[in-house]
Length: 159
Image (tube, rainbow, N blue to C red):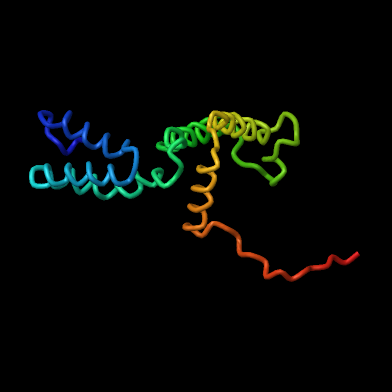
């Protein structure tokens, strides 16, 4: 918005936010196209900056619509990382992997676990429908996030 003069800033900002908060990808692309058609000649550097981050800003639209509110921004993660950093800044590092785990009382690991646990509790309000689960399954498949399938061979453990 710093690249847009004050007189047009409110209108451009409203269009940018409506493209970012669109209910689906088609609507978002339509709003973005209108915005770019209207302001590319007037503010080329601002519109280039808008276009550069557009795909990353729309990544959340691939997930179920009921999750959009929670994943549209990284605030939840940033808050968790900030809180974890605040709680552990007096200790320069964890000397072992166990020192980060929640099993040892009165250790920073317990604080890290507690911070991440608190963040995960915010996801309790997200409802998973059958359609949402199917969409997430399809998204994982599209992104190649499933582990490779075992070819059906049986592996016997030595006794």
